[in-house]
Amino acid sequence: MACSQLVCWTMTGLIVALPTIGWGQGTGAPLRRPIVGGVQPAGGDARMARPAPQNAAPQAAAADGGKVLPVGWEQLRPCDASPDLQAILKAWETESGKIQTLAGMHERYVYNITFETATVASGKFFYAAPDRGRIDLEGVDPEKLNFGPGGKKLGAGGVPYTYKADRNETWVCTGREVVTANELDKTYQTFPLPADMQGKNIINGPLPFLFGMKADEARRRFDLKLLKDAPTQAMILAIPRTQLDSANFGEATIILDKQNYLPFAVKLVDTARTTETVFKFVPDKMAVNSPNFWGYFSRFGIKNDPFQPEFHKQGYRLVQQRVVEQASGEARK
Image (tube, rainbow, N blue to C red; front, top):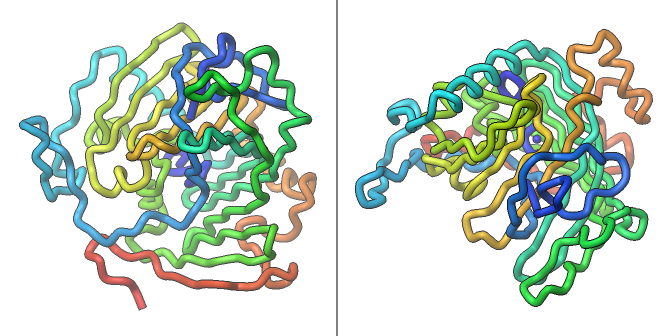
C-alpha cells in the first residue's frame, strides 16, 4: 500500500536502467518524469497482499558473523548513517508528518527474473491519516505503451522481457481491516487487524517507508545507505534488520523528491532475488492535503466512502476471511 505512518501498504508496494528514468525500463503513458540514477533490476511478482504474518518474534542480523538475534527493532541500535543521510531522514520525517490526505497516480511493473516476464498496471491511490488507504490498479496493454528504443528490460541473453497486462485489483485499508478484491473472478478477501496493528502502528506493513517514517525508527529497522544525493533527489537503499520486514522484501531502493519528500519511485526486491516490483510516481502531480480530496473519488467512479468498500453489493463473492496474527503468534478470535 504510510504518510507520516503509512499511505498505502503496497504500493502494497522498485527500478531498471533507463538513461532518463533509471528504474523500471518501460514507462508508458502517464508518467514521463525523469529520475536521477540507474539501478539494474531483478524481477518478479510481489503483489498487493494481506499484511505479513506477525507469527514470530522479530529477528535481526547482527554485525558479528551474521548471528540472528530474536529482538524487535526497538531494541536495536540505530544503524550508522552519514550526516547527509541523517539530514535527509529528518527532513523526510518532518515533511511526511504534515500530510493528512494524499491522492495520486502511479504505475507498477512486476518483473519475474526466472521466466523473464513483466506485468504492467497503472492506477490511483488515496490516503487519509492516520490509517486509511486505498489503491486501485488496472492492467495496461503493453502495446499501448511507448517504451522507446531499448526501453524494455533485457533478459540474461539480451532478449527483451515479455510484457503483458497485469490483473485488475483493489486494496483497501479501513483502519480495522485490509480488504483485497480481484476483478477477474469477482472475489474479495478481508483480513481483520489486531488492535496493535491498527492506527499508527499500521506502519509495520510491507512498505513502511513509502511515504516516510520516524528517522530513528528507520535507522533501527533498516540498514540504510545514501546511494545518490542530488540537489533535487535522493536515492536510499534500505535492507531489513528484522524478520518481519525481511518477510516482505530483501531490499528496497527509494528515490525521493527533495522538494516535498514524496517518492519518484520505489523498488522492492524479494529475498530470493527472483522478483522485483517497481512503483513510479509523479510527486508534483500528487494532491497533498487538498480541500477537494473527497471529491477525487467521484471522478474515478468511486461511490460512497472509498475506505469502506461494499464489494458484496457489486457482485463480488467473499472467498476467505483470515485474521492477521499478532507478534506473539496467536491469532485473534
